[in-house]
Amino acid sequence: MGNTVETLEFQAETRQLLRLVIHSIYSNKDIFLRELISNASDALDKLRLESLTDSGLQVDTSDLHIALEVDKEARTLTIRDNGIGMSRDDIVDLIGTIAKSGTAGLLNKLKEAKDAAAAQSLIGQFGVGFYSAFMVADKVTLRTRRAGTDSGTRWESEGQGTYDIQDVDGLPTGTSVTLHLKPVDSEDGLADYLSEWKIRQIVKQYSDFIRWPIRMATERTDADGGTTHTVETLNSMKALWARPRSEVTEDEYHEFYRQISHDWLDPAATIHMRAEGTFEYEALLFIPSQAPFDLFSRDTRRGVQLYVKRVFIMDDCEALMPDYLRFVKGVVDAHDLSLNISREILQHDRQIQGVRRRLVKKVLGAIKDMQGKDAERYAELWAQFGRVLKEGLIEDTDNTDTLLELISAASTHDAQRTTTLREYVGRMKDGQDAIYYLTGESRAMVENSPHMEAFAAKGYEVLILTDPVDEVWTDRVPAFDGHRLQSIAKGQVDLDEPADDDQQANADKARHEQDFAGLLAWLTTTLSEHVKQVRLSSRLTTSAACIVGDADDMTPTLEKMYRAMGQELPSVKRILELNPDHRLVTALRTAHQADPDDPALAEIAELVHGSALLAEGGDLPDPARFTRLLADRLSRGL
Image 1 (tube, helix red, strand yellow):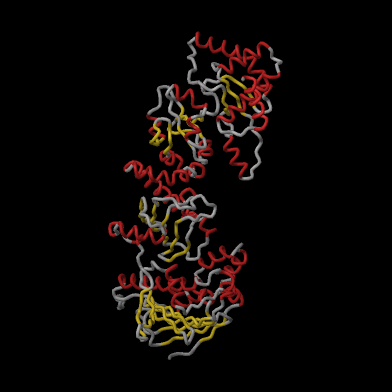
Image 2: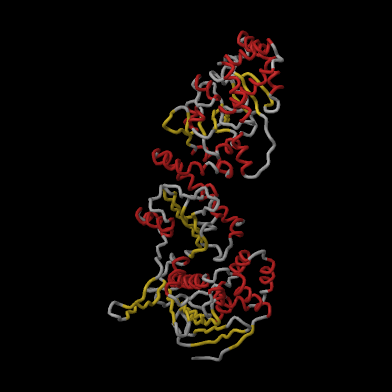
């Protein structure tokens, strides 16, 4: 076959490195075929490019492909390409990286790596993914001839102490890697890599979008018992993201979306983008038209897959999309990442963080476009994903302004239609400087809340926020377009505040407060276990009382949410506000003035406080006592 075989010995440190590659680095042994197909694809790319740039290179590029050849008797699997091939020097440089001197640095880094994922990323950086073949093979034989040369090279090793290298003649242009497979061992993760279905499954998962055909001879038995042999292409090669948008039809986009999402509805929006420059990548993203059933499950998976030069790397790629956009489906194909980059490395990679920022802006921009161009479709999208999008107001401060523009909320302005904050601001009354809102469990509960009475009577619009996340983001976002967000259940709200120069009105207000001063002081003392203050209210018109918080207090609902998550919080006392025009309040003032020591007054005070708690959907501190007091008061009135 040719020249003398030269047997070389691995250095001691390199033998250690080989053992790490074979036994420790890769948790999934199927990866070996992804690595070898990726190498073959790179070789075909290089030949195609070199044939265009080197006019003296006489090669046939009419049928560039990758072939997988199975020999069940010999238990070998061969991965063959007719790409650029390698010279002897190339083998020493590329395939022989692991046998070169200077591997001590890599070995030390691998030993320092905290886990297999970090070690795997180092292997990728040092370019020795080829050696993953030894996970499944007792021996690897490589034959190759570089395009434009006459002599080829044969390299062989059992992954132990030595490797053989030899010049050979008569080889075709390209490279073949023959794996002499280990026996099947399910406990050790060694599948039957001679099985057609297993090879198909690996190619489909990792290499389906490789641009070159991956072919394999198959054998079928027909109805008459005869055997037919055909060569099939295993991969689809349909990497839509690599094609110009103008060349892809809507039907093709929708079909691809169905493949990656398993959703049989068409997507609400498609985002196809290409970034060029220092870090090149393509992205094809889809916004679903319907939320998945597990959108709010702790174990829900993100929908963005990461590819490197059309080779599948990982799904559920957290580094590419924030949690509040976890419903977005699609692929990102980066050109300059290692095949073995780990999730931990991705999280801290500055280029990936830049990609993430651009993807987020593209997704939010697509939603904003839909809001402006198709209000009906946007309303449907918000109904599906509005709740999760509002999580972005908590975790993504860079895009707060964009997300606020997207908010679509129910309001007292229209019982049927939602409103944006921009539309709310456009309807604000003269002199109104705040955007009023109220949170609650349902629209009915919010609309019937005592806090709403004065706002409804005076025609002030109030946003009705009923998602649990509303309790959190409204505390994090101070304002929109220069207008502060104010809960009508917090702080002082006086829609009839007299002007400083209105002496009569100010005098009447002062007299009002003086008339009730004794009652308010007594109630503050009597109810001190439950409230920190009792004061007159300007937000009530028909109810006797309501419970409010200070401007910076946590709402009771938010307090419950934190406690449900196991967080201990100090108890927050709130404020009881009284309607000075209500018959019960005026009667209570008169009775207190007549006999402040009457024990029945303390019971009435408890009932007033309990009724206010119930009106806002709160929990009574002692329901049994409240029921008993109420029954007693009712019986006295009969």
